[in-house]
Length: 390
Ligand SMILES: *Cc1c(COP(=O)(O)O)cnc(C)c1O
Image 1 (cartoon, rainbow, N blue to C red):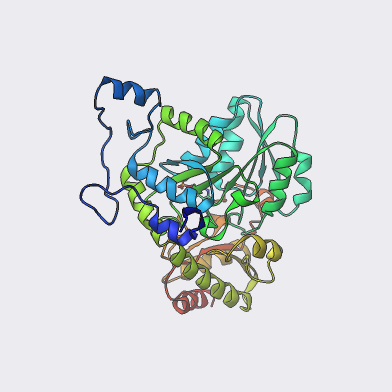
Image 2: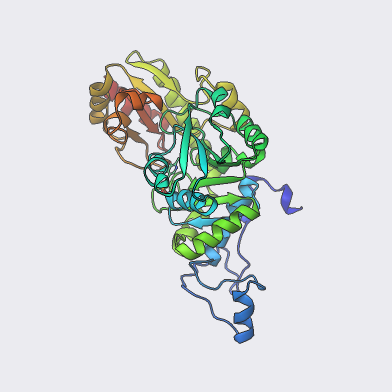
């Protein structure tokens, strides 16, 4: 069977380093900072890149290469580079591709630290960002200027679980000759592969569902070879590389991504349906609930609805805080995509520094609660939510 025809689940398991003389079944961990050269000629050819080989683990390492190869196979991307964290991937991708005077058009609802990069740090280098409202996609094109180089979005968004039409973003990027970059963290390469809709680069925080077990941090950017080459050269010289141990862990994690995400999504749908019928809940947002404003788009571009459910408890900011305090099993934690269900209240925590008006611009109402639905039995998750709502 030709390799190109294999399914994502198979690639996540069978994309593997060449076996050593020991014929190990699982790839070994290459905890080595550098690699040796056979002679001066080998060294010369390696440094001039006439030979493709490992030199130093800040550049490449067998474990990070295996992890990158897997994600490329799953996303349908040509090449990639793995980073120590998702933010290192996001920062390095922008820093490698942009110069002073360039302009970014981004969805307003992006991960908090990404927002901080755009508003606090990039302007220092005269890189400005214009935000569009994810629920008004017809306004995107008006944000584009002569200097716009990158179109950027996450879908589903954090924490409001809005959905952006990837086909539309792909068309806009093509018409205006922009680099389309998608943070695919919430969907994972199992549920959605934005390269198919015309993304040039796809970024993940591997810390979330890719590890999925709350153990290691990691990040990755995959996409077109010419762009990845620029990102690789930037990273090779600035040092945000993923550690071999974390790469080994993440590569093993990918082997179970599909079964884990299937179960996460199954549980999340059950939780969303429970909340939708609860009298103390104003509204629930989950991409695969018919009541989601972008339900049709979600169905078109995602295999399943993901593991994040957003809802609003009646009674505003105080009710949201109280709900969190009443939970007995679900964790209050900053992570998401873990085996353990995690509940957060953005208005009193992650987004508390924003004014209410600014929060509303990214769909965060005072009573909004975000649940990262875990892998516990759905009935136990629902029981905990139910007693806390009481
Ligand atoms: C967590 C997260 C990031 C940042 O990833 P880290 O691994 O924590 O640096 C970026 N984007 C999204 C959507 C995230 O959820």
